[in-house]
Length: 278
Image 1: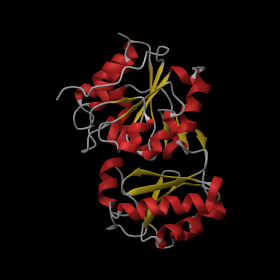
Image 2: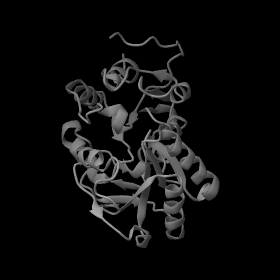
Image 3: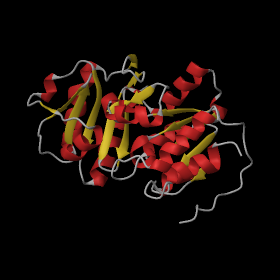
């Protein structure tokens, strides 16, 4: 497949850092890094362009990316709720306010969603056979802890997830969480079947700003790439935003560029065409 046609916006300042989403962007639907994706990240290193990743995954769920991609930048897990160095040392952590954990869980369940909680290195579920538990275990490469009393886990919760294959219910739950809890949380879909609820500053826009401050790079010289509505926040904090071909029309309209899908080397194509210096 040829690269999709792109509009002709004039080139901006040279890119000094690329921040990438993981699922639906950096990896295929089978959660694999392609050889071409790995090679494109190595080309970024060779060009002196920093590369960083951010995801709704827990820190351990991104550890398998470190060696093949030679990651040296901070890894932003839980959409920025926990930022770790590549050796998994915690750099920053933002957790859901204790008093909101139970109301959030109950609101998500009122929309028919199953619920998970993440605290520290642990992932808690109420049903080991529940929707997408097996899929998530494969993705993050570790299993959950069964917690019958999940509402008793209220301190240090970095992320609450609502899960359902009714995508309209997921979107409705996300909207209800934003309406009810306002600026006290961030609630956005990280997959069509997931809504992630985190600390209000645990969002990908804040991740882009954190990296800008840490490395002294103006946001105009940061590129971002993603596929889901929660990636749009980081698009707004970058000079070059790239949507995947598998992203929704709404996400694509929020980006300056659109690449191919994650099943057609969209990440590598974007790096080669838009990010690397010509």
